Image (tube, rainbow, N blue to C red):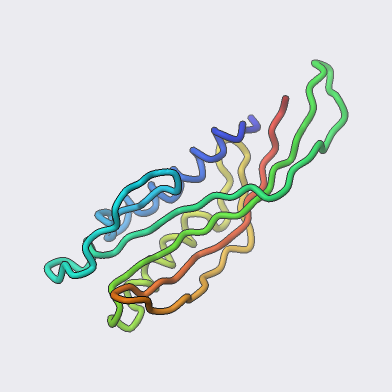
Length: 149
């Protein structure tokens, strides 16, 4: 069944949440785009995994009517946009932790379709660089889904 905007957003977030929870990085904090959570302390040298965190952002970019009215006078509206998952790891580990998490994030979306018909394409990592105590790497990709109304 096609998703609403809210359902599609929830399903996209759940894919990332489930992938991280099923990994050895299950304790990594995910900061959602609309929350005012605080990133972990980058100076916490007791647990490097705990000092790693992610931020997920979902941005819609295009959309429009993609069908004529059906029997119930409903229409299909196609929505597209992108997902950016920012990965922050403590700088200085040679990108090994970032590479592990890149694989987890790519696995969360590549080749997947949600129950609401959200599908994903063109996911790729993008190394940003070091800023202060953090090494930042992004995983960016596109999504598409249809909404019936």
